[in-house]
Amino acid sequence: MAASDDVGIEGVETGSTGTAASGGEGGPATEPRLPNLAVRIYQLFVSPGKLFDALRSQPRWLGALLLVVVLSLVTSLLIPSGIITESIRQQMLRSRPDAPAEAIQKGLAVARIFRYAGPIIFMPLVIVVVSAVFFLIYEMGMGGDAGFRSVLSATSHTFLIPTIGGLVTLPVVIKARDLQASLTLDLLAPGLDHAGYAYRFLHGMGIFGVWAAVVLGVALSRIYPKRSAGSCISLVLGLYVVLKAVSAIFAR
Image 1 (cartoon, rainbow, N blue to C red):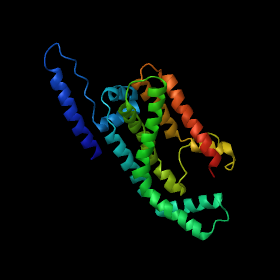
Image 2: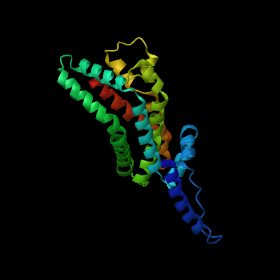
Image 3: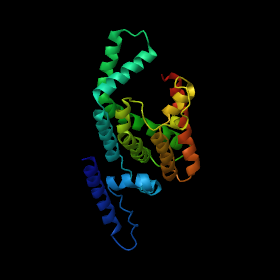
Image 4: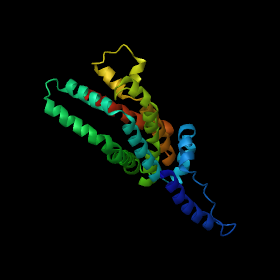
């Protein structure tokens, strides 16, 4: 449904542009039609530069954001409840070995709520916050003029990478019966102590997350053409690494 709504909106807007452009030979050039959401997902993985060039002048974010929510919810619901319960229980016992049974039950109740609330509420919130951060950096700090919708559009599409990645790696989670089982950089260093900081840091660095950070850097360089792709990728990837480094301090 998200994809069809997206196409409908785009058809109206593109049609109005085409009418204006057909007023005469001296009229403004018609902008290239933005493809539908399915094609944009394909471009996201094979030609992100082309995608974000189009999104800069024709920002679309709702279809991509709704798809992120739907796919995240589907992934969450496909995980057997027993795996979620046991993973949360083990995580709580690692952080609080003396936790009473009542506290564990409350934690499990929160986890059950978050199973639905996470995709529906927190995923859109995260996308908006990330968009706001880079909007402030580039618009307020570096004098950009693209507008918030362009950044939100880029972020919404980029978040499809880890979202689809989570769905792809779902069989790994189910087979390992571990919510934290995924394609992470600690696989490159199998001898690390699982209790050590280095392991926690690398385990938090998901391959799809790194991929998304790089693509978002490319997106920002197209939205703000005065900024090179290298500088934008370095900024986004650097912030991602810092976030994971801080998170690893508190991870258990």
